[in-house]
Amino acid sequence: MYKERTDRLLALLKAAGAQGALIHKPSNMRWLSGYTGEGLVLVADGLRAILTDFRYTEQAEQQAPDYTVHMTTAERTAEKLAAELVGAQGAAVLAFEDDEVTVRGMKALTEAMPGVRFVPVDRRVEMLRERKDEEEIALVEKACAISCAAFEHMLGVIRPGMTELEIRFALENALYRGGAEKLAFDTIVATGPNGSLPHAIPGNRVVEKGHMVTMDFGARYGGYCADITRTVAVGSLDDKQRHVYDTVLQAQLRALDAIRPGARCSDVDRIARSFIDERGYAGRFGHGLGHAVGLDIHESPRLSPTCGQVLEAGIVITNEPGVYLPGQCGCRIEDTVLVTPDGCRRLTPATKELIIL
Image (cartoon, rainbow, N blue to C red; front, side, top):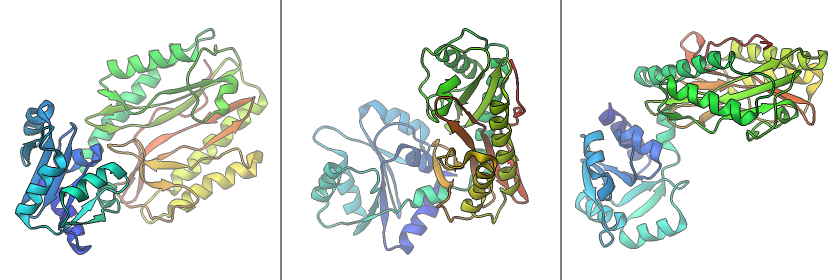
């Protein structure tokens, strides 16, 4: 699997005139080699190398048997070691991750390899990662199953008088008890007026009757992320709150029907956004409709007004419209969705109907 991935990357690089690449981004290193520690990955024709320090050499050998592991030291830095390996291969043009390497890091590379020309990798690894294989899909699906089970558990936990932080801790505990190895991202819990903050930080606000409670969370399993948002009611809602919830739910369902191979990302976004506007909430849905997920919680492509990319089978993407009314309330409903050859499939099947606790 890792050999095939590396070969695909090298083929893309060769077509662009590069003979190899230095990979610094942790998720790209993992996708290419299986290695999850620190350091960097160096690939070229006949070369598959991990450069890391003493703390990670044994780990790298265990996780990435297809790669040779080279130990760096204070004197033999990663840049100097890379120069030795590149020199032995005779590579004259190397790609590097221009969105990962700092100015200081780039200076160290060019000083260590004055005869090498560096060119941007232009997110080619991320492009290869967009379409998930069966093993990756299974890991995302497991992360989603853990997340859905945690949501179901929380329906018996949330009650008036709890704080957002208490809900967060209970939810995260349920994720870990269900098998999560990590959290996919920092859990969001927002109740009452805090619901108008799309990325609210859970605090000491107390849940009251008549509040909507939004929970945006996800498990990480086998390195892969789930992303799910559900909004529930604590006690009865007024007509305005119900209208907000119904608007978001119907927008989400309309977008879900449009997710399929060949659909343009901006068109899917427009379907949800236009419906929300028509319902009287123009300007109150201020973020993109969704983003791909995988080893990173935010990947490409994006469901947004500006993304002209076309969806393909194997892409895993979120569908998360929301309506946010400052000082009043907010609602977001999100699924992680797999694009299939003939449409799409929700990987987060937990109910989206309005639940009143």
